[in-house]
Amino acid sequence: MTSTSTDDETVVAESITVCRADELPVGAMRLIEAEGRKIGVFRCGDGELYAIEDRCSHDDGPLAEGEFDAAACTVECPRHGSLFDLRTGRPKTLPAFQPVETFEARVENGEVKLDH
Amino acid sequence: MATPETKAPSDDQTALKEIGADYAERFGFHDPETGYAYKAPKGLSEQVVRDISGYKSEPDWMREFRLKALEHFRARPTPRWGGNLAQIDWENIHYFVRASEKNSRSWDDVPDDIKKTFDRLGIPEAERKFLSGVGAQYESEVVYHQVREDLEKQGVIFMDMDSGLREHEDIVREYWATVIPPNDNKLAALNSAVWSGGSFVYVPAGVKVEMPLQAYFRINTENMGQFERTLIIAEEGADVHYVEGCTAPVYSTDSLHSAVVEIVAKPGAKVRYTTVQNWSTNVFNLVTKRAVAQEGATMEWIDCNLGSKLTMKYPSIYLLGPEAHGEILSIAFAGNGQHQDAGGKIIHGAPKTTSSIFAKSISKDGGRGTYRGLLEIAKGATEARSKVVCDALLLDEESRSDTYPTIRIDESDANVGHEASVSKIGEEQLFYLQAHGLDEEEASKMIVNGFIEPITKELPMEYAVEMNRLIELQMEGSIG
Image (cartoon, rainbow over all chains, first blue to last red):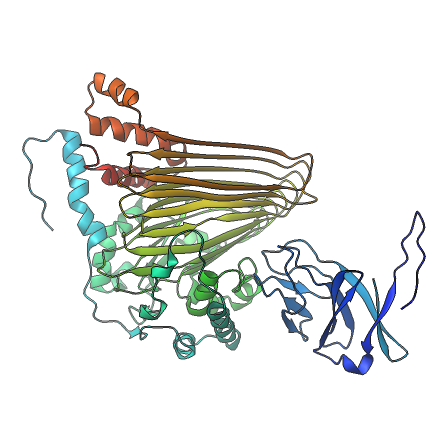
């Protein structure tokens, strides 16, 4: 884990290691916890990594373990069916209408890193 | 069915008696259950869902959508709030019945027994008078549908949902289940799995449909569910009023109606959706209706709930663009053995949005009226304004009224008003009217009509008349 510094104006993201890159193939999701927050890291059909907070903006229920469509790069909230675009965090269907928080995920030295 | 003659009735009494005599004919008849082109066996299974989809020659994506929805339906528990849904035997219902082989464009082509049914409902006459088009749903499938030529010239699409999917698959697929996903709730999942019929309406940008588009729905097969699916798209600046009237014959066993209605009002569009509903008193009426209003758009639900054994219906509006406006007007009339659990939901998701909910319920003979509503001002919806008014009128000691208003406000500058009242027909009101020459029944009717007048005046004339007649029928014999 990389330590970070914070000052009055800016918050520098912390970075944590999620897993080895080969442990997160296309179509897979890893759920991790960072400072009390759960975050889902997904690898979509385009091979890219995307991460969102594991909390539906509709009713705060868990989101990341919903049905993941790697080709469309979406996840469906298991509670009421809102479909979220993992690239933007925006819902594509109601009842959610506000975006969920997204995070930067990348591969570094063969490991998946997450900035949060 | 003949009604015994009464001696020297007054004009009003005669009129009322005629309505009563007509009632069984209009709403209580039961056409012979023959000549169905297709009738699914009772119960819900993957095979039934595949058969429905196959019968309609649907594209693969729709079949997969249905099958996934079936999984959601099975995975979800039956809701334990609202009314008592434990009485529904899901396996004792026909989920799909098809009345005739093909849709008919002209009245002459409609089969005789179906035509007789529609004649009783007065549809052709209504059409001649002021309707833009007629879509009548008979046994899960629209059999007669006509859009006036001038509407077609304007690019307005108004057809049954099955045809909409066939002929405008690209538009349907773009919006399908984006407002109400199949996993939204158990009944939406059920509808998504077995839907059939309903209306597809598309109004191009800037087009104003002057006359209301109208569809009638009814259920005729004993134990048959009716699961229509309606999708209305109003492009930017479009204006449309859709009206549905529901009537159903009387059955000996319980029947289920579970519709899904999705509406998208694009920027500046105006959509009004009016329902005057009179299901027979053994129907479970469990409907999910939801609309999105984008920037500057107006969405209005006018929802009149009579009849049914249990209605659970809360039309909702998501105000997702600045200055969008939403209105819900709701009337519920609960008689003996009936539970009307109705209301509305408005979610303010953008700044400067405005809304109002006016709900009125009348309960008599031990009926139960429930107002259940949600008003939400979400974070970011600054300068929002809303007013919620729910009034209940109890006509006797045995009846019941409950109010469950939920208000969530996440912005400090919201302006929200909420009023609620429960009242009984007072002895003093009755005495006053009787002192002016009305008998007790007439006086009660007048009080009830006055109570709902703010909503009935918003209905198209024909529906206002129908609504008042239905209320009068419900009131018949209620005094003394």
